Image 1 (tube, helix red, strand yellow):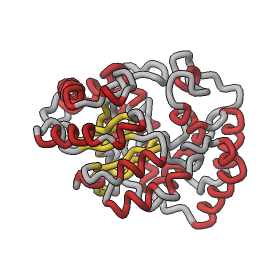
Image 2 (image 1 turned 180 degrees about the vertical axis):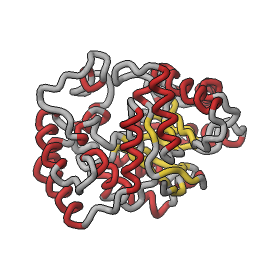
Image 3 (image 1 turned 180 degrees about the horizontal axis):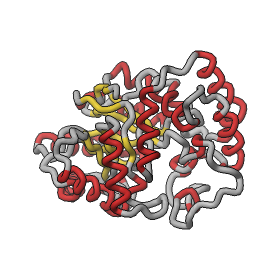
Length: 327
């Protein structure tokens, strides 16, 4: 699989990574043996980048990854985790003391001395402008608790603020054919600064797979049920902030753009991979087959210009008016 340098980390990662929120919580239960099967299949297919967070299952996702990598020390996987969402969302909590405690917990969960990458996990907006917070992150690097730090953001404005920080290695942001705003300023700014881009929610919480109908019902412990309108956390993390019913209609139209031999989900991943400035995309997977199909998107030929134009037209006609301006 193609490898790209992840911004200021200087490390190469696969263009298709693996998001592991689903191994912790929020998508219905995933058994431990199924989680290990997903991780193992991803590695077998050339994936070298796992994305997790300390809050996914209150550390379960991290612990599963740590257990897997202890069994597969030769896997060569770069693990990016996140911190900050387990505490009250006040800028005052983003201190060096807390950073040390949070990263020490993640180091224990993952079974490593130095974390490859720690991302602030969509912190309150003032944190991005806090010298104290970023000085604290620099201290973690100096103490070798972490090798590099980054941010996971909600908005393009937060991304641009973070990119201007000289120590920011990468930015994780929602990017998919239903969320085009980052293409305007964020990706060009990141490329110019040498900052990596990790594209999350690449399938709009599964909408872009084309498998859902307006009558699809998700489990009660699935965020696609309990956070559909932003009841628990930022609405942009669920279906990219798109109304589910109209999103299903738009996804059906998107599916018609898939080239022969490719699924709609693979087409969405291929679209993301070829956006200038993108380093890696992190679809989730709950089965071996999903992990295999996601990885296979990296081998698809680039989408032609006509398809790219059709994606833009679909977004303009069906999606743009639904997306809240702040994203």
